[in-house]
Length: 152
Image 1 (spheres, one colour):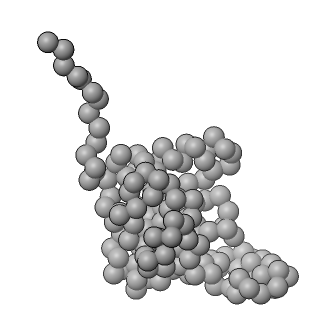
Image 2 (cartoon, rainbow, N blue to C red):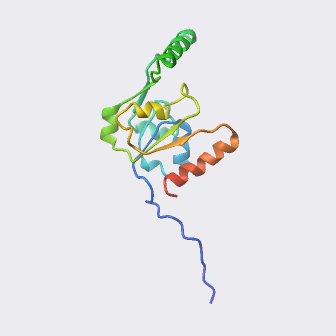
Image 3 (cartoon, rainbow, N blue to C red):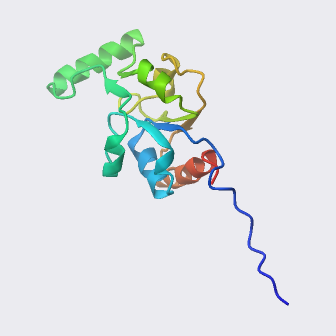
């Protein structure tokens, strides 16, 4: 009699259950993996899929994104010069959400919240999955990194 010896996969509930994504691409990956239910918070830039808009927004730019580009550039340069973050995190909301994992990026300090921004917040001790894609291959690898970090 033949038996099916399929590989054993991790349980669906393995890995962190309370995740905050601070990067739009990571949010989309988490949903594509079927794990959107684990997200408890998002960045100000996470807007897809539409269901994510119901989650608390825990970051905001410290500058006016609708300002003229020259003004934005001056503010970004000023922040960089004195070592100030471009983004602010809502420490009170993060404390309420009690995330077990933060997904951040370390590719561009202007584009999205970075580990340095997190280090300046009340959730500095929360484990982070830090993505840093520089190529298409890196982006594809990030899907695997997110899946592994979430235990699937």
